[in-house]
Image (cartoon, rainbow, N blue to C red):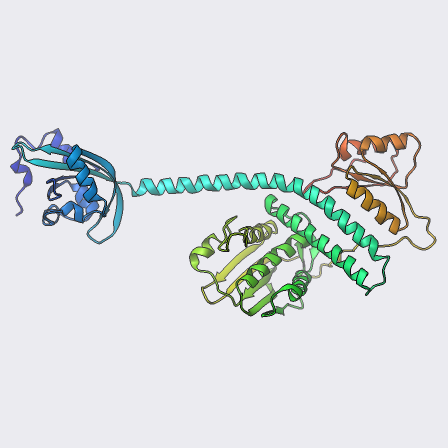
Length: 476
C-alpha cells in the first residue's frame, strides 16, 4: 500500500487545515520549486484525471508537464518574487485541456526546505458563461442597431421615394411623346424600370428593418421568378446559364411582391458570385402539401462549409472581400421569408454548390390573381380633364406631378403646404380632386385632412406619402 504522505508531517492532520485540504473544491498541489509534485488533494486529482501516485511519478518538472508553455516563465517569476497569480491551461491524463486560475506561493517546510503550493480552479464554466454573456450583449447591440436602422430606413424611404417618384414620373410622362420601339422610348422605359427597381430596393430594406411585409395582396410567385430570370439573362456573366423549372399549377400566395422580388434577387446575386467561372443557376417552384409552395434557388458554385452556414443569416456577416458585400443579403431574405410566415432552408457543401429553399403558405386553391396596373391611363377622348390640387412640399414631386398630370390631360395646381391648400379652398377654389402628401411641415397631411373635409366634405382626396411604412387612418 502506498504510504500516506500526511504521516510525514508534524502535527495532527485531522485539523481544520487538513479538512480544508481534503474537502476544498479548488485543486491544491504541493511541489518542489522545480515543479516535482509531492502531494495533491482530491479536487486536484479529479481535475487532472490522475492519482496522487501518478502525479508524483511525473518526477522533475511534473507540474510543467501538466501545463502549457507559459508555466516555466511563471515558475521563474515565482522563484524571484515568492508569489505568482495568473491563468494557465492544464492538461488531463486523456490529453484534454482546460483553463485554470492559479495562485502559487514559495515557502519553507518545517525543515527549512523550499516548497511551493499551487492552488488552482477550473474556470471552463466561468469562461463559457462570459462568452454567452458577450454573445447576448452582441445580440442586444445588434437588435438596437436594427431598431435604429428601422427608424433610419423610414426616413430614407421617404426621401428616396420622392426622388424616385420624380424620376419615374418624368420618364413615364415622356414615354407618350415617343413612338414605341424608338431609341428615346427605350431610354425612358429603361429609366422608368430602373426607378421601379430602386423603389423595390428601398422597400426591401425597410421590410428587413421592420420585419414585416409592407404589402399584402395575392400574387403568383412564378411571375416574380420569371421577372428575375429575365433580369439575370440580361445582366449575368455569359458563363452562367439560368434554368427555369416552374410548376404550371403553382398555388397563389399572399405577400409583398416587391420584397419577395428583392429577396430572390439577393439569392441569385449570391449564387452568381459563387460561380465566378461558369455554372448553372436553377430557379424552381413547386407545390407542397399541405397548403405550401416552395421556390428553390440552386447553383453549381463553390458551396459553403458548416461554420459559414451557421452564421450565414447573421446581419453584416459576409465572406466576401471588403467592398464586395454588406452581409445583409441573406439576412434580408430571412426577414422577408419570416415576415410572410414562411420558412427558409440552406443546403450546401464545399465544392457541391448551394441550394436554398423558401417555403410559403399558399392561398386557398382557386383564388384569383390580380395583376397590378402600371397606372398609365390617359384621359378618354373628349374629356375636359380634371382640376387637381397637388399639396406637397417637395419641389421635385411638384414638378413631376405637374408634368405627369398634364400628360394625362389634367390640370395641376400646386401648393407647398396644408395651410396653403386650405387657404385656396377658403378663397373659393374648387378642384375636382386633391392629392395630399402626408409628410409636410406645419399641419401636415394628417392635420390638413379633417379641416379639408369640413370645408369640402364630398371632395375626393388621394393621400400620398414616401413613407411606405406609414399607416393612414381615414377620416370621413
